[in-house]
Image 1 (spheres, rainbow, N blue to C red):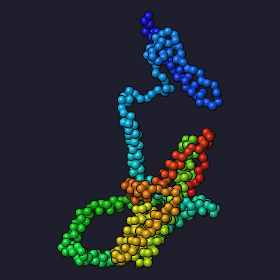
Image 2 (spheres, helix red, strand yellow):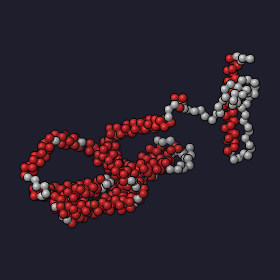
Image 3 (cartoon, rainbow, N blue to C red):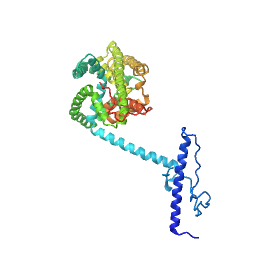
Image 4 (cartoon, rainbow, N blue to C red):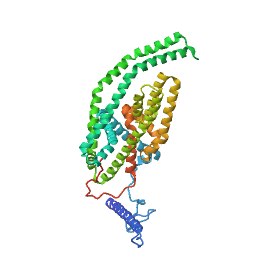
Length: 444
């Protein structure tokens, strides 16, 4: 007898209901089997009345079984028919692609924001490095029972006096030695011209005059670009002064109120995440302090080692070149090479190619000692980075922010490396819900 439409609908609803109940019973039975506290065997789960079995057999109440019902896996599949027709590899590639596009867009927007407010970001980054450098001195004065504000002011004023005094000595020596260096440079150019005429090239006077004329023409053609660059540099004097003042004030407050600032930032996070972020932040700060200390020590050893030989061979601008080598050592790999090349060039102009080769050997030897012995020994594993990562970081820093970017890139990568490793390590027990914030050690 043919059933009415109402009975057919009711039969289908009942079959769906019983199928869902069977899935729930099966899941509960599996959970009971996995529970070690019970030894009772799981109850058999049958199709139940009105539930169709495989092969289209009639159900227990005599109603037609209808099409077979596939076994339920306990969850609903999220793959549509259209997705099923797309190869799995292409679906995975598409999922990765749009996620990478989102990350790239966020990164691009972040770079644009940083570029827009670079007059604030760059001084703050420099101030953070200086605070990491001066923090141990503040700690020593605090242990000597100095008030925090007085200890910070004493350290900051002493550091500024040292920097200003060094710059004054460098400028004075440079002004005093320019006439002698110019005369030596003129004599060196004449020797080069004589070598070009009498050496293996055998260049004539007409060829030399032609090359000199081409050089003058190039200078004349690029005068406008050079002038505009100088004007652009002059227009940034206000930004430089503003950034310098911001660096001074930021260093002062980082040293005095660093702990308070950090606890305020941690309180902005959810309670469950505060202890992890605080732990990672303290580890990052320790890494930054260790990096700055090690860099200063390595730079000092580089400058003293090369400076001694500059004095021994009576190279002009020995003290300014030593200061330049010290500052260049803060930019790993690239800075030491460039500052050493300047010292070799001055030795070549003043004392000839023999002394220049000796200075070149000294520079290379000191840099090899630094790279293979001093840095691994002083910096240790806490801030160890692969040389390729260092070169890529410096290149990206130069492209994005010039010299300042090269100065900040490596410590930034070292800090991020420490923070990511600390955040990704095995979780500790959760913080109680009533915890407000963990106690953070002051950055000073």
